[in-house]
Amino acid sequence: MSSGLRSPAWKEAAALLRRHRGSLVLALLLVLINRVAALALPFASKYVVDEVVTRQRADLLVPIALLACAAVVLEAATAFGSTRVGGIVGQRAVADLRRELQQRMLGLPLSRIDAAESGSQAARLMADSDQIRYVVGTGVAQLSSSVLTAVLALSVLLWFNASAALTVCAILIAVLVGLAVAFGHITTTLQRVAHLRAELTGRLVELTGGARVVKACVAERREAHRFTGQAHRLLRESIRVIRGISLLNGGTTLVAGAIGLLVLVVGGRSVALGAMSLGSLVMYVWLTGLLLSPVVQIAAAAGELGNAAGALRRTAELRAMATEEEEDRNSGRLPQVRGTVDFDHVSHAYAPGRAALRDVTFHAPAGSTIALVGPNGSGKSTLCRLLLAYDRPTAGRILIDGRDLAGVRRRDYRSHVGVVLQDDVLFDGTIAENIRYGRPQAAWADVLAAATLARCDEFAERLPDGYETIVGERGARLSGGQRQRITIARAILADPRILVLDEATSQLDRESELLIQVALRTLCHGRTTFVVAHRLSTLRSADEVLVLHHGLLAEHGTFTELLGHGGRYLHLCNASRSLQGLRLHQPVHAATRHVSAVAAKEG
Image (cartoon, rainbow, N blue to C red; front, side, top):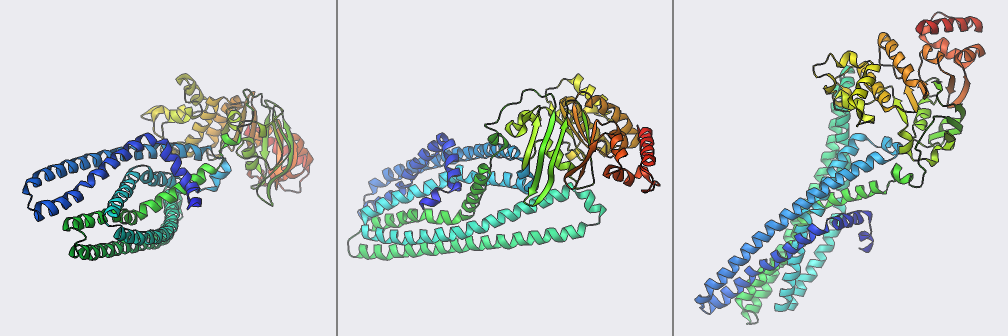
């Protein structure tokens, strides 16, 4: 039992109770008054039977009835008060917990967030915090009420008939042990139910977001079949829970009935022998019912208690994960950044034995433009993730202005970094809100200037609501090119010192791309820029091109130098569409002239 009380779930419950102890103490005080008032009716029944009925004391009936009525009114008032206080504190606890869990989830390192299914995590965050409400809110008041009633009832029973009370107590202890075992099995099954429900919700969120792909691939029936299979697994586990709770309720009802029968037999024999009055027997039966109420209530609340225990355990697991801020607690601040970036023998692996980057070393002076090229899987995205401090390198160092990035607070560093990704995310808000996302307090004139530079004005001003147009979830109401222009405007407004462009114009048509290239050149001026792109015009204007292959830095140099070497970079250029018709066996100088001509034409 002591080890159970030291478990993370119970520690989490204790922390929640301490946080709201003021309101809970008030609720428990009301429960105490409520339970003392509840004893009035058993005592009233004893005196009505023994004095009013047996001894014909009719004059006592009215006073007894008035006292019992007052006790009932007090019981009702305190029940209302304890339920209201418990319910409010429960809802406050849920709101506070949801806010804390959301902040903690977003504060985790990106590798942990990527490892989790976003839909499942969102479902668990909402469902778990709601389940915990039972522990902090009405559940505490109800269970405390029952336990207190049982203690008071047992005290009176021991006073009137110790032997019978001890017999009932022994049976109850055996029943409680059985309840604990059964509750453990039910809790385990409920955890599987919660896991399956979160998976099912996550899958539904994923399908809703990917509805276009599902329809385009005519996969509705296949997805329906898969979803049905998951739903049936959830159904089977849910039926197991219902079966367990039903057996628990049936068993406790049977035990309660057996104890009631025992009290009637023993009490009736005592009345027949003159050892107990009839009124005492009536009161004894009533108090026995109060004594059994916690057992019955725990059995009835087994589902809520099991769900709350599982939710507390998962909440404790989330709290045990260190956030980026906690990991960076002893790291230094980075108030200013010039933009010099050095990779010093950097390697990175997402899993042991699966290196995505291997011993990469290069120097990027402040204000330079570095192009990253290579086939899929060569390590370009991994290098960008390391630049954005989403991951820490497994070996080597990344230096920013000579300072090791591993010793710098990631929040400070990222405030100087801008990013435009190939499939960047917009949030369900207005166009202006999405542009302002990196600088919420930016002046409207700055927002318009950034939007104009990114050519957002060409479509935003034609919309009925202009920049107040709602873009929809992930920007679903806009075209791919419009979404990407907004993300470019967001980066322009952020005014970063280091810029990462991962196929920043991939969603644009040729005409729009040529217009935005001018904006990007303005954006990149004076900033250290890393560009992942395949357009020859982009590579031609880069200060240095890094050619990655299987995680290695295969080649590096200027656009012209790499073409002259006739190595892997020329091979990549020959494989591009712009070189269709050019034979690979042509002399290097011919290939160089052709590539340069194409690049000049694109530029």
